[in-house]
Length: 549
Image (tube, rainbow, N blue to C red):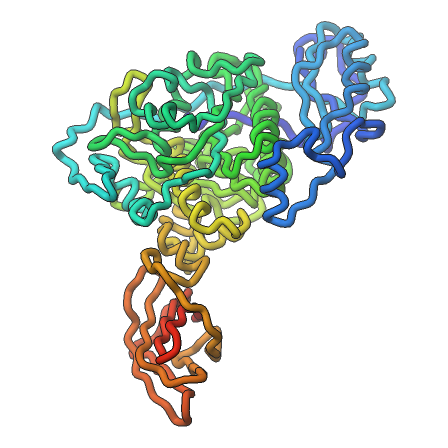
């Protein structure tokens, strides 16, 4: 359910000191931004007071310092706001702000007069959501099946094999110990649905949080999040195997589908901060925001620059904390809006568009570019005819970037599990560099359809399935190459092979002019990209990579 909704302009950008009586009474919730975090009992030198050990480890592993944006909002400032008669509804440490409920204009005037307050801005109302679509139940006999290490994918084979997650699963990478935060509208009956029995039995639901209702109960709410989750972790052999079937999850409800008031983007920010604090590695959201009921407040295309909408700012903030953030591109490709929404415009996140099972762009999938000319989406996965499970336990073909996005999130879990020393941005770069349109990205497909095993090879220079690699030094030059490659070794070469990121063997001739200096002349002009070379000598087998630019 990629909503057709619009998030507020960044709260830091506007300072409002007063409102007319009519305007103030029409708005009951405000973002209130504070000037600083002075006097906080927390400090950056003791992050364990407000971040989990896993959250701290994620930062440490990627060389990310804890900073003042990690410090909670000053409770003294919250108390001052509450003393005006208003009620603090939510708070955001990244924005250093609070969502405040007021009942009259006197309260907001009193809040604006506080010395700790920098600005305030009202929360508005929304258009209704643009839903995803569902086909009739799929006839399983129309699909081929496959068993990979006891995984019988059934009709879900296509959405797995299209992006190489079956290859990752074959090699033991199924998302084990990777933690995904799912921010959605509810997870109806996930606690009893049989397709999630492995998830429950293995205690891989690490926590739940309902930001909308202010509690931890998410299993009686909307169905959308449950279907999104099935794309990642369903385990019903012969019907549906998720792309990250062994990952662990936090289930976070941020959207109230029955509400007309725009608090969902605020809920998302609070939910994202919670996900960061408990230590998720990956955050995936199949929501998007564009316009208000009041056309004067509509989000405009010119604001899709990744730096204006508050939710987009927060999405990039999560990336800066070391989280890999994914968001659905949206379902407006055939509509008047046409473009991606918020936070899909954020520059550092992975925005996911939709293709069908043959890899053809789904016409409903929202497109780029962003207002500042960047290509979006980043990649595309199967979002047309995607096999999903609904809360009743029935399996359907679903259409929507809402399903393309979690398919990608589960795949990222497998890839990052296989390459734990890499940063979130290195994982992102590998995915884009090895996707189907990496050399010619566009605003329909982005960098194209990913290939997880190719991305793995790109990251470490070895092919999956190779159990042992002896790493010794050889000299390759020039690197990047043109039409030849020289190899210098300390011993005679017995065998050389070269393959591309998809494992296709590259033809060449090998010659030598001086002892232990060899020249590879490629039979055909190499396409730009990354290549892997294996050199066998009487002393070692060396695997490394080179680049053609």
